[in-house]
Amino acid sequence: MNKLKRSARLVEMTHYLLSKPHVLVPLTFFADRYSAAKSSISEDLAIIKDVFETGGHGVLLTVAGAAGGVKFIPKIPREEALRLVNELCRRLEQPERLLPGGYLYMSDLLGQPAILNEVGRAFASRFGDRPIDVVMTVETKGIPLAYATAAHLNLPVVIVRRDPKVTEGSSVSINYVSGSNKRIYTMTLARRALKAQSNVLIVDDFMRAGGTIRGMMDLLQEFDASVQGVGVLVEAGVDEEELLVEDYVSLARLVRVDPKSREIRMVPGNYFEEEM
Image (cartoon, rainbow, N blue to C red; front, side, top):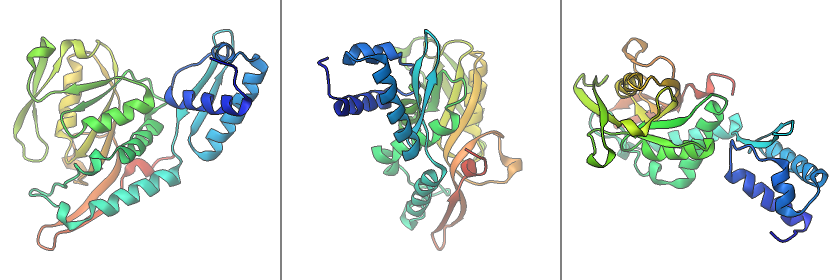
């Protein structure tokens, strides 16, 4: 790359770090890339670090030593996450979203990249300090959420299928009981999709009693994998004794549905009950 003016170098370095979250970048990489002294690169990174942290974009970690460098960790400030969730709650309370069975129509929101990006950043902010190898979800509506989260964690996505696919080779299948209607369903995961003893973050769009998530947890036992966290966009707010999952993080909670008046009431989820 041609030698850049400092202002241009700062912009280019910032873009590079934002596009490579959770990746350790050696100072020598930037020094060689911009034909600049390490001392100059260090000064640039100090400016970028201050902008990241002041603007609430994330944290720029410095790792000392010969194999050290810098690593960008995406974060979302609590007040910014709360604004996001309050806006989601407002939009989810629209009466026309009510579906039979108390479900909400959310596909339009899950199809908006700007919203998905912020939801993914919120989950990455909460779970980013945990040892995670992959982000897992079950088809189909949880897929965009999983990819948005994985993008901020710089991790691959694993998709659990409802039915086995010939193109995915041999697979592991289990039966699980839905927590809402008590029916038995099947889920399957290709053996090549997940390495044994992987650390997994589960992400899903909607959780009522948690039967599907519990099914994924049981499926992961067949791979000797460990669940490092569960992130849910919306939980239904059922009684605790009905829940099949104990440890999870929800962004929003559905607390009231009146089919007659078509009233829907949403509140922020337990994401905000703990310090971020």
